[in-house]
Length: 54
Image (cartoon, rainbow, N blue to C red; front, side, top):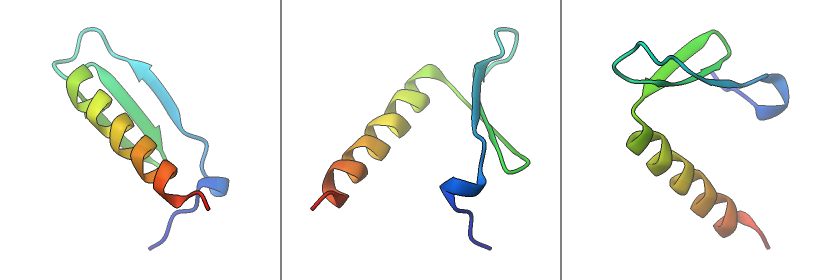
């Protein structure tokens, strides 16, 4: 299965009552993470995007 960004409508929000408070929801998936995990993921995405530019 392949997911393409143009077909997704990602939603990021906080669930302050959960143990892992940052929630990323897209394509029927719900991914929860701590703020530290969210920052690490954001850094990895940013670094990959920088490397992909010509």
